[in-house]
Image (cartoon, rainbow, N blue to C red; front, side, top):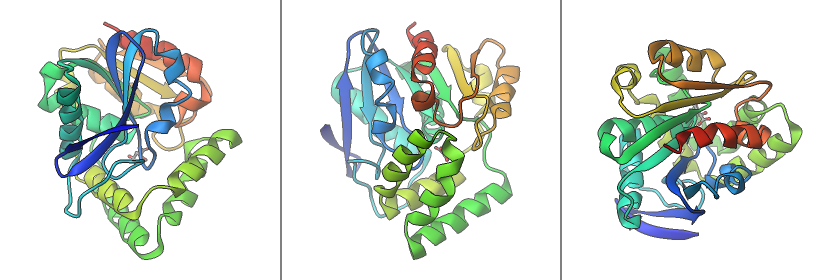
Length: 255
Ligand code: MLT
């Protein structure tokens, strides 16, 4: 992996393939390797950039609290470093929140926006409170509380479960706590999306137990021009559960 120093952290990333730049933003609490089964199916069409978000994988983090917008700034710093003016951007779940923050703040940098197993709404008061409670539990008891509760919600496929269980277990407490609070404080992106001018692609598993497919349908209803790809039977990890179909949907971002 390569890395750059940016905004007080070291940001690690992989880059492979040729074509339209495509940045793949991973979800919580995972890292860039969650895309590894899909990338070989994309690298003939795209110049694929896979960052580890701050704190996750091989990237470092800072002590002070940050926002999804700060995490988006890291990614723009990476684009600057790579000399990429404009990129297709696909975010998985939390990665979708960061992609939305990036597209809103830097619309000129995004050629197309993909939201995979994600949503545009902010957290309800109850969900927000739950995130702070989970962050406190992680601080006290360690990352295992999140690993055990999230594994069955991410996928019903035992192969995928084994992968995410192991991957989540490798992530650090500060990364989980920082990201939980950043997600809790994120804004609602519906009004941004309804005015966005870049193509939007929604990819969602019909059996997603973490973010129900209705969240994607709500975006499609608010933004009729968005392309909506429903992946039958997939849970929250379509890039692993249905890698081929997910890669096909992501080809829609090559505009
Ligand atoms: C994710 O899968 O990235 C997160 O769990 C999404 C969320 O908690 O809202």
